[in-house]
Image (cartoon, rainbow, N blue to C red):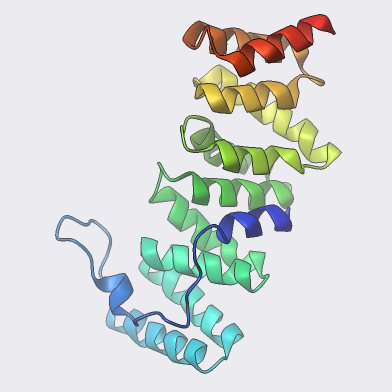
Length: 219
C-alpha cells in the first residue's frame, strides 16, 4: 500500500525547500471560508519552516503536523500530507490527509490517499466515503486503478464488499464503474454484470465496455 499512496503524493511537485513561508498558507481569496491562523499557529509554522530550511525534517514535520491539526488549513494539510509521505511516515500523513480530503471533496487525490491509508490499516468501513468520492469523479481513473491493482488478497475481498455497498448507495462514473466491474468480476460476477449493464445504458457504443462484456460472456 505504501508504494501506491506514495506514488499519488509524488504526482504533485514537491518543493518544500523553495516554499515562501507562512504567507503561502495564509494568502487566501476574500471568499475563502478557511480559518485564519492564530498567533500560536503562526509561531509554530515559522518553527517548522526554519527547521525544514535547515534540514531538520523530523522536527519540521512534527510542527507542520501540529499546526495543521490546530488550524485545519487546507493548503497546509496538503503540504503536510505530501511531506509526511515523502519522508515515509504515513502515520503522520493520515490526519492531515483527512482534513485535506474533507475540504476538497472533488479532488480525487486526497480521497485516494485517505482510502489507501485506511485500507492498509484495515479500517475498511472508514474508507468507504473516501472511496465513494473517487468512484463518482471523472478524473479519478488513475487513482482508482492504483487503489485496486496492487491490493492483497485480503484487501481485494474487503474492497469488493465496499464496492458492493457503494453500488447500492450511488451511481459510479462510467470509467470508474468499468474498473470496478473488472476488479470484482472473479469474486462477484453477478454484481460485475449489473455494473456493466449500467455502463452500457449510459455508453452503448463504448468499445472497451463492449469488449469486456464479450469477454465475460465467453467465459
